[in-house]
Length: 147
Image (tube, rainbow, N blue to C red; front, side, top):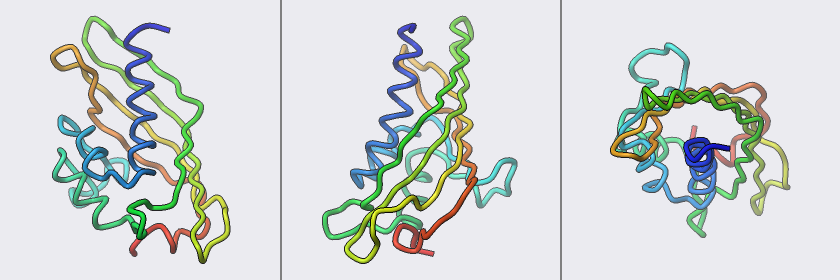
């Protein structure tokens, strides 16, 4: 695996790790030069740009518990990378499966879906450019989302 492939894969996994730790500032920082689209080709209100926009999105949507975490595990798999070293760009697709257990909710899968991501290299480091989230299956997300 190339150095770029390792860096991009680590970026994808770091997103999940930070989110599960409840580190919303850390998650937002991954998008300092990018954005999250909640809907592919969606209206402007579904696009969250830069660290501030992404932080706002997670603050608005994610329920955090007394320990500061959402009590979730975002498991990412089936990562497929396509890197253009010369252009300093990349794209990927991957699956996600989110499990959750709270004092009121027994351990279960609450949502599955997939991501379509693009990346760009800036000053030698890889950054998220755009993450588009797709929900494929939904279970009980009432303990995870605020709405």
